[in-house]
Length: 159
Image (cartoon, rainbow, N blue to C red; front, top):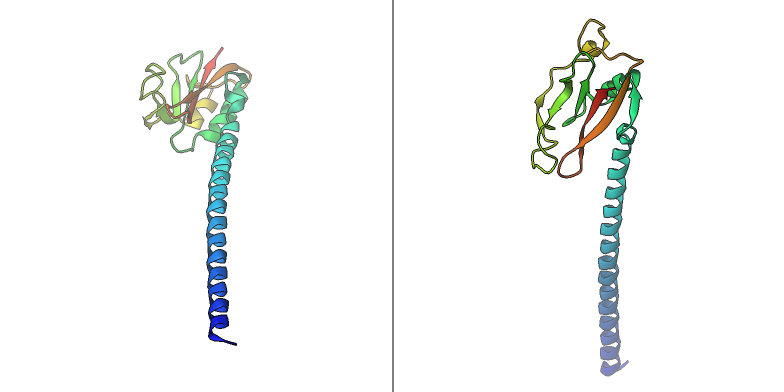
């Protein structure tokens, strides 16, 4: 084999190596974009699924036992509060965290956490307490969302 043939074979090999590297980089970049899109879709789906746990409490009428079950289920969540107003306590009692609902909806602080709530599950079970929730009572529920549309609480108002 002459030097010219060796040079051509080497040049062809180098060209082929560069072509393969370029192809690999192009495939990697397109796969990276697809991965980012898939992650974004997964994140949106995960957010929707996490919100579905609260759809039953979105402007619905519930029994007192369902209110107590919601209290048991959600009271320990971080950055989340439940307010229950009863016939004996129209001002209501917060459980878990106190959520700011006293300002207009457009306010930056609406739906923000204001601190720890003093309400306990034993209060809603004690018939002598003003915060007692009658299992047969009817309550209207409403979700409280912050400025980022994250559900921060539920308000139950006895009808």
